Length: 480
Ligand SMILES: [Zn+2]
Image 1: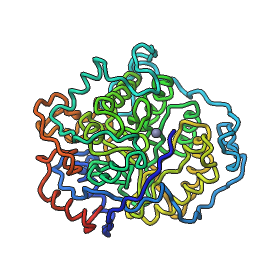
Image 2: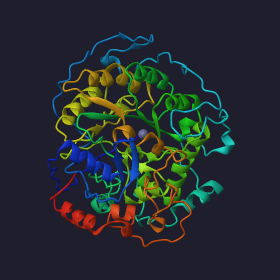
Image 3: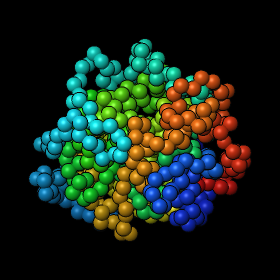
């Protein structure tokens, strides 16, 4: 894991007051669907969304700095109903002794019916053959028939001609960092686009997610989530999926959402377009081979996304999901991933989480927090501290998976069950396409380095009102 230094890149932001219903409707428009309140299904609608530029202002090195007030136990051990013991917070450190792990609690045979309407039954049990996959945890090679085929999915999409960054960090590429606003580069200044999911629409709703698994301690987390009746979105790494398919199956079959988090977990902006396609494509394939479904949500490692990476992801049928960043630049990263490496300790990570909850109470919308299920320390922090703190928090928090909190029907979260032809966003050259990935398009549109979401969504699909609002937003007049 790499530590990112985030320089100061400012953009003016004003958050307008709006009722919850207005925000909800706006986010529904943002994600290009409308709620049908009689059937709870989503129907495509014409996007008239407006907020197209950054939600950022001066970044403070990923910091959440307000004083924590959440009241939860900070000493242990706490024995859970399933028999494991959570260490005292002060003992959740890089040198923490290993603990017993749980096996998956149930096995699901081929042919089992998943909890997603219209999704195929579970395929034949997965057998990993290394020769069929890229080397684990290395940037996926691009010289394969698979990658050549997946590259075709970009046809007809406007992929901005933005050069790869040096290493996905601001300090490593000052000239790219200076151009971050034009690039829509989240890493340097928190620039987001209309197509990004960065929050839950409803205030005081936490869109729960865990990244980088499935891993050794994920079954403990699944048991705990089940015990508190909370579903999460799991952003999984392809190199882990092929190792622990049964854990992925348990996540999926017990109602959690599965989304793509790349093959080797590199910053995507530093990769070539072919490499980004390979990273997303192999992970997508690993999930499909295990579950029989192809996710329509993805999260870039480190949140490292720009307009080129966005456009590639959308062309491949995957909507980017990041974590919340407040207007003042506080990112909702618990830094739990820094505990195994000793950069921060458990107490510090939990204090960061408490600050996040306090910051969340100041937002007009809900929020998304970055946490991980890869390491025992991060799972212990979740089970023993962050999730209980959220359950006991005042004011009351609603905890939900990210797709669900955004009113995206579960069927839309996988290509095989998705019936919404405009989610993910269609190829501009075939606006009535019945396939979500945009595959099969043949006409390339012009490229544009600037223009942000206009590039990502294709300019000829964007109403002029959106373009006008984008100009206003640059001047700090209006933002979501
Ligand atoms: Zn990650």
